[in-house]
Length: 391
Ligand SMILES: *Cc1c(COP(=O)(O)O)cnc(C)c1O
Image (cartoon, rainbow, N blue to C red):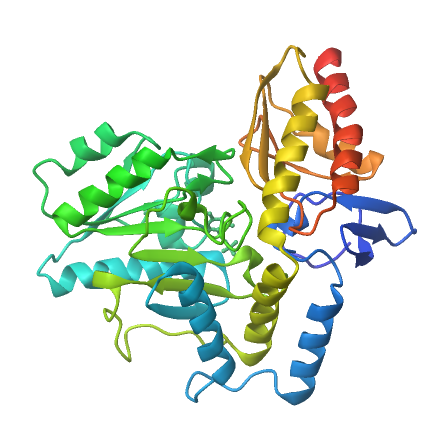
């Protein structure tokens, strides 16, 4: 019995420590971590470079304040700008905060152009967070239930459907932007087609709207490129990051470019903790290690190998509808709700997740090895087969 507020149905396990792709529970049993704390532990557990960087930074200074200059924050903004081609970065502490910044930026952009009630187009099955504005933008009734009145100013369309966006824009002058995940995570690993993203870019350019990508889950190397949208070579005006950016140390970012740059001025937005020296040291080290250890290519290669392995092992198994993904963002869609697989996998020593009721989701660390990939397929495929056969 504890005094925790009852916001999570937690699995019956607590971990004492980790090593690479493995977590150990308090009794010493080990688990292959194919979830990374939901796309967070980019470098796996206890990466020596990250541990050293955080320890050294903690021994110097952890927090100062955005009232002062923070050289590590400036350095991190440069590294993110280099990799994304974006112009400006605002730092915060989580994905919903990064999206809050994006939504506020788009509204202010509208107000500056005389649009007093700005509207943002958002997608079905999307997930943008749990604050009031971001749950209002989210395309999942369960997330919104009981929290009305929702924040106004969002128009929802089906994902990956250009005609639907064109229809909703027709005759409206109050839309200021389009917000979407290039790869939907919580919604079940749905990948936007490259041509769709390109067409949205053109729509936004023609109408001077902001194209806003929520890359909180698919960003920072997870799909095999620095950012998910880079597969389509379509650059957004606004992008949000968080989850994997600090390899477990909380940090989020909202990036802006072109017509979205320069919108925020002092007094418009802020964050007490955002981009503090400790978090920036973790993020800078994450980016460095991703580069030096070639982990973008690894994500691409190991992701392919897991998908191929599962496709082979589950070939012809009735009930397996699709095996899809980009890099190390992988979904196995079944024909029925399969939440019980999470507990069965845990028993067997594998950490996985099920999202959108029917999609087994895998988000291993970006330094997952070929051997670990093989072990994951070997452990998971029989569980899925057994589950489908028993129903
Ligand atoms: C997890 C997630 C968020 C919310 O991030 P928090 O850090 O939990 O606030 C927002 N958008 C996407 C795409 C996510 O996957």
